[in-house]
Every structure is written in C-alpha cells, then in structure tokens.
Length: 196
Ligand SMILES: Cc1cc2nc3c(=O)[nH]c(=O)nc-3n(C[C@H](O)[C@H](O)[C@H](O)COP(=O)(O)O)c2cc1C
Image (tube, rainbow, N blue to C red; front, top):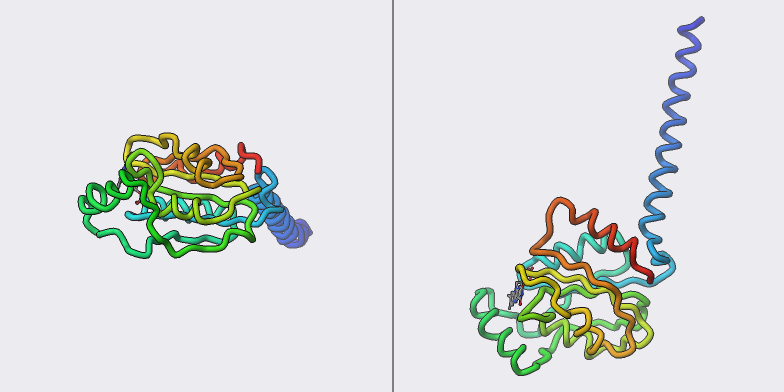
C-alpha cells in the first residue's frame, strides 16, 4: 500500500516541481527584460568594434535587453595592422575631427539606443561620431557602453550627448578589454539601475 502511494506521489511531486520551476524562470526573465521599463520600449544595440571586444560586450548586452543589433562599419575599413590604425588613420581622424562615412541605419523606429564604442584617443571611435551626428536622436534615450585598454571611459558619455542633439544620455558601463567572469552580472546590475 505504502509502495503504491509512493508511486502516485513521486511523479506528482516531479510534475509540481517542474511547473513551479518553469513559472519562476518565466517571472525572472520577464523581470530582467523589464528593467526600468525597457520592456515597453523599442530597443537597438548599435556598436563599432575594430578588434572584437566591443562586439563581444554588445552581444552580451543584446542577449539581456533584446531588440535589434547593428554593427557600425566605416565605408573604408581600418587597416588590420594595429599601428597603422592607431597611429595612422584613427589618429588623423581624431586630430582633424573627421567623421568617416559609414553604413548607416535609420534610428527613427527606436526609443532606446545602446551605443557601444572602444575608447579611441580619449574619446569614442570616429565611426560612432558619424553615427551620432548623422542620425536624429531628438527625444531618444542613448545608453553608452565603452571598452578600453586601461584609460577608462573618459568623458565619452558627454561627448556622445554633444553629438546626439536632443537625446537623453544615461550612465555608461565601462569595461576593460572584453571584461571578465563577472561581466554578465555587472551588465545586469548596471541595467537594473537605469531608468529608461
Ligand atoms: C586607435 C586606437 C586608439 C585607442 N585609444 C585608447 C585610449 O585612448 N584609451 C584606452 O584606454 N584604450 C585605447 N585603445 C584600446 C581600446 O580602447 C581597447 O582595446 C578596446 O577594448 C578595443 O575594442 P575593440 O576590440 O572593440 O576594437 C585604443 C585602441 C585603438 C585601436
């Protein structure tokens, strides 16, 4: 008799645990996606990346916030050689204030645009300047994310605000290189504190 009862109760317990576990996962993923009211917004994650670090972080952010993702590319690619890019083309663009032509995208359908850039010569990379200067960000929210080689985020968020006229620019996340084992958690905590 006891054995029979166990045969009925055990599978029942397994089903109940499964249902509860699924419900918990659903509610926590909804909570993550709804950080600061983001769930009601149309989201774009746009980024430039020369060496792959910012792309790596962009994909992590995108996996947490959803929406669309767009890689900003200069029409004329940078050389694959570091010195040629860093001390040649990029330095010249920075010094002369050049905004190089890029593949562009229309940001008008989006409410919140995450904008990712590596730190290049103490500010954002020139293709990101083009992206911000050539689109209309009036009434939109920009959320910067920055990767760097040791210098930090500088005043990149403020530099972005100057180019993207009429946008509200939120607090950036600043990540050394491509982050570490805490980065997913850091991104989650950063998102939770933002008010979109
Ligand atoms: C042209 C150039 C300029 C850079 N300038 C800076 C800088 O001013 N400060 C800094 O901390 N890192 C600087 N770095 C390092 C990059 O910010 C860092 O490696 C970044 O994570 C690269 O991102 P990516 O792999 O997406 O291109 C520079 C790198 C390049 C290629």
